[in-house]
Length: 205
Image (cartoon, rainbow, N blue to C red; front, side, top):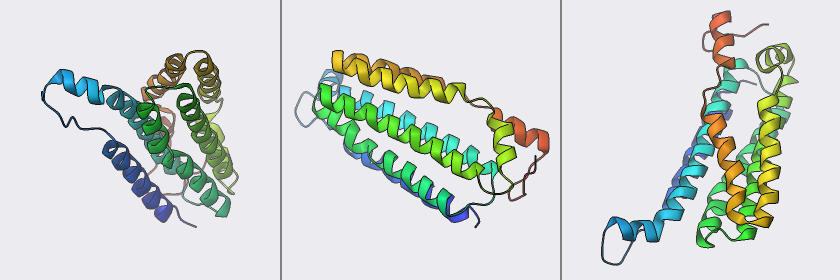
């Protein structure tokens, strides 16, 4: 099966997730209409929205790059992709809960679990894509060692543990992971440039 419908569907879902998250932000409805009131009413919400927005952007970016390497999928990839979208679709809920609770312990822990779920789901998506005949060698050549990915999983677990001690501390590892992944990952682009790939062309290692 080709990847076109899966990519289009995924892009649409991610766009909806971002839209739902921004609609959850509170608008100051009492005077004075100034910056202090905005910070008091929506400051925490804007920060948690920004963090989650960055995460959704990172997954969209990596998802796009991942599907530049493969032009065929199977049923396992479809279900793995749905698992990723399910995890990401919970971001508006867990983000809003953190905001509404003013960073209470349980909402921050659940947010961390949500981040861990999404990262695990993305790992399985890569795994099942690599099992599609003819694509495993390309995936191994491009991604090779997954130190960054493993470090991210460890930091999620650390963040969840810290949230039990002091909720706001849990957000520190989560933010570090987001900042780390904001640095452009050039592995896919370097591979495509080296192999002079064009859209729709079958990639061979």
